[in-house]
Image 1 (cartoon, rainbow, N blue to C red):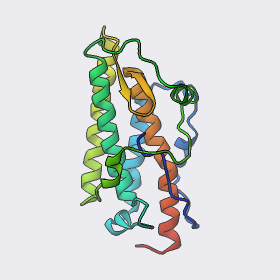
Image 2: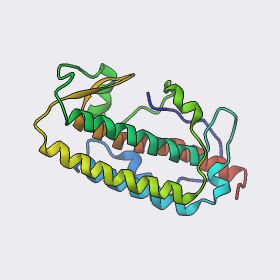
Image 3: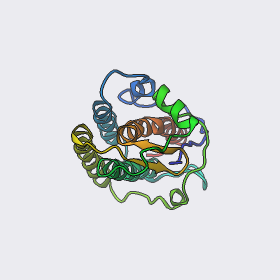
Image 4: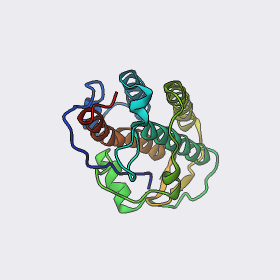
Amino acid sequence: MFSFFGSPLNGQRSTPGVILPYLHIMHSKISPISNCDAIIDSWIKALDEYSLSQLIAIPSSNSWSVGQVYVHIIQAANFFNKQILACVSNNDHMDGKPYPEARSMFNNNDLPDILLEGPPSNATTPQPTSKEQLTTGLKNIKEELRKAELLISQTSFKGKAKHFGLGYFTASEWLQFAEMHFRHHLRQKKRLDEFLAANNVS
């Protein structure tokens, strides 16, 4: 699965107010793309609060920096978008089903805040080279997901694509999963914010 984890870090700094409300979006009546727009915008706005030194500070050898979390969510969202494009272009795997764990996530419109194994590529997630890199990446995927939603509304195909740990998703489910994944990593970001504050990283 795509890195559903976060290191348990102690500290006093709270997560930026612009972020916190999105931790509680459950069964929203707003469209997935509207939620995606809002959550991506909140990630972009939060970048204003960090120096590059803070973005690349690593709490421990087995933890990501805030910047690596940003790189990850951008890379993951681009992968999810590719799965959407595959689903709307053919009828492959129409009979595929999501695993029960995935069905529960979609019904709850939320991912669990637990440690789950991610793909090997997570171990090589790079540090960002600049804040501009992250801003550009987020703006680009925001636009691509908007295009993807339009394709979902227009296509007659009903293909599905397999998530390696959760079974087969429709295009609409991949879009919902993308939004949930952005929101899920706010928990990890909060723990990293606490580390930065506790250690006076500037």
